[in-house]
Image (cartoon, rainbow, N blue to C red):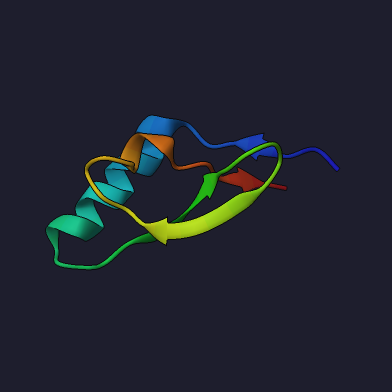
Amino acid sequence: MKARLLAAADVLRIVDLLRARGYEVIAPFRGRGRDTFFDTVTDANRDRIQLHLP
């Protein structure tokens, strides 16, 4: 199965829009190796969001 990586700019626009409207955004981040974890998006980590779609 191939996965497509979403454009980072598109993902960040959606995240920023939701955060501006007062939502707490939880997103997937890539950890060590192939590990993935979910965390609250902050200004410090928003550039490290990693989304893959089949």
